[in-house]
Length: 383
Image (cartoon, rainbow, N blue to C red; front, side, top):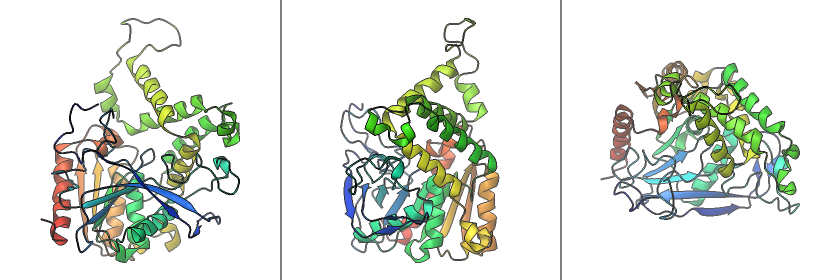
């Protein structure tokens, strides 16, 4: 926990919740008759309401992107490195909004909330949602907040996919799209990783076909394995070698199947910690949203045709050691934008941290991201 709030933090923040009664049709063919969205805001909305930035979270993220909920918090929000006074998303200049997506497990309507029709947890009855569904719900949130047009929609990984979808589906409602460490659609290998993670959860004896809430249990083993697998893909080989090498916990081989290498201990710790803060049904939903994302599918398989709808200007950022969403995938996005005659800036950042690099305070990344956002701020007249 912090002894005092750092000067470049947004400080103590409180989540807010909005209830929506207007039914939301979903891509899966079902409808959510009513739902809640939990969100946080940082920085002041200007009188013209032109300086708002939407931050979209990735698979295991949520609305708590920056600041602290209390002085007892051990860690700040997940993107503290990039949101706050003097940071790339400068809260002295921007009004920042971040919401927990539908299907999430941090307060927005999802599997671990109560279905008003049954009085029970939604559990496996909660519909599968897509990136397009999230964007439509975020547009309704913007309506309620009185924000007609975002200065920018920003996101990393799955969040970057939402930024792309925003530019395609609501072209007049954002000036800039910032797409970081993302891809135009998942590769077969990425879909395979997600399927193995889902099977780990689905095969856990405590899963109970998704109704584990009713049994007072959690599919701990399955969710832990899913997180361990995911965590390996978020790091690069160089990062893992630098952090762990082949170090032994006890300095010798014990010739058993317990934890012997430091990297094994680290993965188990990460898996156990994740179980305490995340929901297994939500993990299933989020990985499916990743699998289904393919904006080109509605345009004859042409990403360039999809982007012809966009009016926003783009910043696309990739990281050299990110093998989950490699720079080659970002360059596909850039090529499609250029083929569509859209305005795009591209930065490929030398970094050894792998996919998780988008969360890190890497100097060249922070500088490039910050310079672009300064341009956005000048456009809306932010001092």
